[in-house]
Length: 364
Image (cartoon, rainbow, N blue to C red):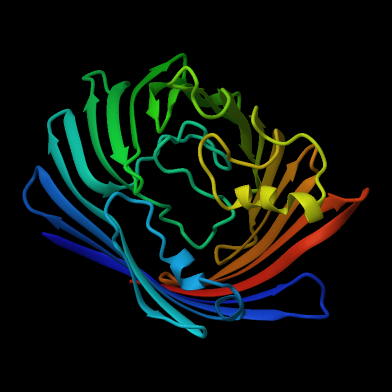
């Protein structure tokens, strides 16, 4: 049996720091997912992502195409079909794997998504596939070139998982996780090697009455005695609740021992902000401590609104994102998403930039 699905999205983005100058970018985004069930034990999966980008960013960002096409995997499965100063056409395979299931045993080999995170905004347990919450247009999230095995115990409440991957620099990560349930909580314990560090972590998911309660933490220590970089501890905890009127609220707190806990001057520290877009489980946000809050409410079965925000203490870095979506049909929807970034400079909050994104998505 063969399964085939995907989507086609068209998005326009208006970006500006103030209303004196407004820039326009365009993205045409297509995804194709293919699964072949060879028999009752073996499945082959392929995910292809195609993007056409043009507008202000393409025209004014040096090496824009090369940056878009960067592939962090061991095998480069990314292609720049068109790359010039006005338009970029990029294709990449972000899923390509074979899955084998036999009773309680499961193994997957190839490019895949290994999701060890439990929380919504930040995931220090996610050693293989860190993702950026702000990158809203990539719902599938990145994959990694890896081997993963899982064994589910007969009680149905616990499992063991072992995974290993290799990246474009021939750096490897190998880790194991044990999941179990007790006292109404799902727990996980992990240990292994993350690039050049030893990693030990744990996470939980449960509830305090009617309030969802989740958290995860990981400790990183250089493997070599004179290893590069300090020991790092990253932890997050989150609470979420759904009211009777369907209003949903999720709040989280993040601590990262290697984060910044002071104000910065953009004229001298501008490179520090690059860590917002390049994430690892050791560096999920630029600041040492941060808070996250999101609210979502379905106005009707077709209309939904939400508001998300992040705040980095010490640096006084802020992010806010309101959005509204409408379902035209079961497979056709539109969404309007705003994003604004702020940073304290010389004692007052200043705008780093704003974006307004309008997206039409057709799923098939």
